[in-house]
Structures are given as C-alpha cells and as structure tokens.
Amino acid sequence: MTVAAHPVADGLVLRPFEDVDAPALVEAYRDETLRRYTRTPVDDVGQAAHWLGLQYEGWAAGTRYSFAVLDDGELVGNVVLKRGTPGGETAEVGYWTAGPARGRGVAPRAVEALTTWAFAAFAEDGLCRIDLLHEGDNHASCRVAEKSGYAFAEVVPAFPPYPLDGHRHSRKRLDGSE
Ligand SMILES: CC(C)(COP(=O)(O)OP(=O)(O)OC[C@H]1O[C@@H](n2cnc3c(N)ncnc32)[C@H](O)[C@@H]1OP(=O)(O)O)[C@@H](O)C(=O)NCCC(=O)NCCS
Image: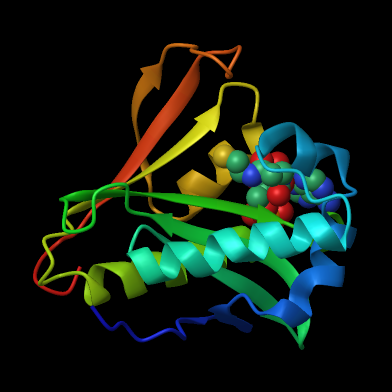
C-alpha cells in the first residue's frame, strides 16, 4: 500500500526518518528520561544506523510508520504508528520528544497529526482504533494522551519488561475520515 508520507502538525514538519538524522538521534538518546521509557538504545552512529534500518524495514513491511518531528529543520521528536497486523482494525502510537524541546506541546501536536494521517491513510484498510500505552509512572505521557484526545480505557497489569501497571488510552475513528 502506498501512503502519503508528510502529515502536517501545527508549526511542525513530520517526515520519514533519513540517514542524515543519525547524529541528532544519538544526541537525543543521551537523555535519561528517554532511555527510561524506550526500549532500543542509540548510543553511537552504529546503533543509530541499526535503529534507522528498523524504521526503513517497518515502512517497507507495513508494520511500523515512524516520523521524524522537525521544528525549524531540527529533530525534536519521534512519532510512530505500529501496525502489528497490517490490515488489522487496531494500531498503536508511540513517541518521544528530545529533552530540550519538552514542555512545548511537541508530542501532542505530533500525535494529533499522526492520528489524523493514519485514520485517513488506512481507512480503506480497516483501521478503526489506535491505542496509546504508557507506564504507570509516566505522567508526562499520560498528559500527552489526554491532550491528543486519547481517552483512558483501562489499567494494564505489569508484565516483563514493564515493572509497573500501565494505562491504555485509545482513540476511535469517528466516521469514514476519522
Ligand atoms: C512524554 C513526552 C513525550 C512529552 O512530550 P512533550 O513534547 O514535552 O509534551 P508536552 O509539552 O505536552 O508536555 C507533557 C507534560 O510533560 C511535563 N513537562 C512540561 N515541561 C516539561 C519539561 N521541560 N521537561 C519534562 N517534562 C515536562 C508536564 O507534565 C506536561 O504536562 P502539562 O502540559 O499538563 O504541563 C516527553 O516527556 C518524553 O519524550 N519522555 C520520554 C519518552 C517517553 O516517555 N515517551 C512516551 C512513552 S509512552
């Protein structure tokens, strides 16, 4: 399936990751909070190349649509739609914002743009609901969910590697176009 690859966000540009993003990825992953809540560390340009390769493979396979979030040309975040089952009714959104760019609503704007894009791009493909999962102590992420229109759905019991109960929030496609 071919999908448009440039969602718009208020004041931000979203585009698929490129090799040129490697140094900024390494810099972003120096942040302890980001490392605490993400699973794939990026410590050097070699690991950045591996990370970028996973994103390219995900796009090609239709399982993972990740976008670099740019503010005035600078990488300030990552937002991703994960479709474990291409063609399935549900998907999951994930995100991070680089440390220096936090507190400016980058993640809510990026999640909003990704959500609008995803429901339009995959409407005919059966996508009806997007879930947003976060660990129970990640209050900043809970706020992103609330600000992006992802309603609290349920508590998710802790399971390895997640030591704490978490939250599932979700947003449903409202009609044919969301
Ligand atoms: C969660 C995260 C994506 C929020 O991104 P953001 O672009 O800063 O989002 P917002 O600007 O809307 O801020 C969200 C909340 O973060 C907190 N916050 C505000 N300024 C902050 C700052 N300078 N530094 C850290 N957190 C801040 C506030 O609680 C804010 O909620 P509020 O608007 O009610 O005050 C970001 O903190 C992050 O990347 N964390 C590490 C990775 C992560 O947790 N990803 C999500 C996994 S589920």
